[in-house]
Length: 251
Image (tube, rainbow, N blue to C red):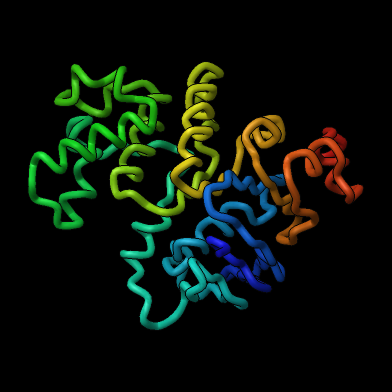
């Protein structure tokens, strides 16, 4: 079954800006799906629609349908908090919570009602391992999360999402502020995480998109220009606008 199906979806901001125009996409389980394009092409708007963060924009208008595991995410009976635990979002700017490294990862588990310390400890360690951070912090879990480097903070925020064991991880420019070494570490983590999760990512650059994508969609002015596998999108694009963008002729 398709993990997420976006069907003829449009989104308009309160000021009249139409950020998405009749978008159609099918995202499969356990793939790393990349959404790329120039600034203001609708990439981040689409991510926010997928776990209904768009609900927070008062006065915005949406058309079309988005299904998660075959069910309409905008149906009246959908528990939005549960949906956001299943489709988790990691933003471009890492935002650790006040408190220790351990508390940052355990927070969501405790809010979800988990009480057994052993179970929480186990989930915290597993999440930090999955985010490729455990070996760097295992001896200082009680220290402030704010003392971590930028790359470590980003992986901590990823671990915080992973602790809740989502089905889908949304990544909005997760390496935009990181040095090349930290970027490479995050990218290696993603190649392992997709064995367990479906990952939908807005990349930092076309080069990153080409490195990590299983499949990709090129967005321009809110429309999907082209969608396909890594080979097609970055080596043999069918659309001239896609070719112009990936070869640096514009954007």
